[in-house]
Image (cartoon, rainbow, N blue to C red; front, side, top):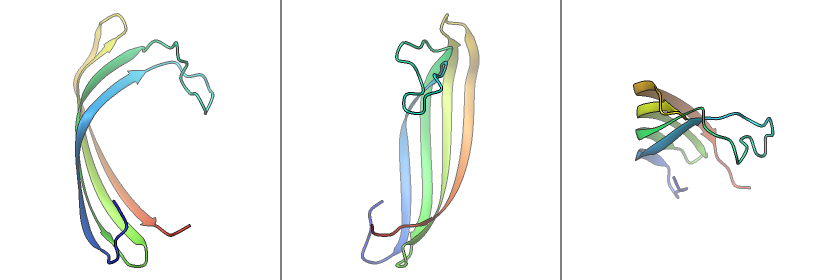
Length: 101
């Protein structure tokens, strides 16, 4: 989303691919996963996103976004299936104040 001279409604649409993995963390906030870490569980899938909002002239921007993701198969590093057809739904309500720095 880019700033506009006048406010108004906006619509967000998105689609993409996802890659999930569960790995052992390092405890370091800068590099949370070791470069040599093997995934305990991993898989991939697809996702869709739909969002609507309103941009006011006062830089106040409320938005609501719904995301749907579906991972076909999650497997262990040895190839054992952990879950199939895993689906997640996320509803995000954002109340933002955007300003110039």
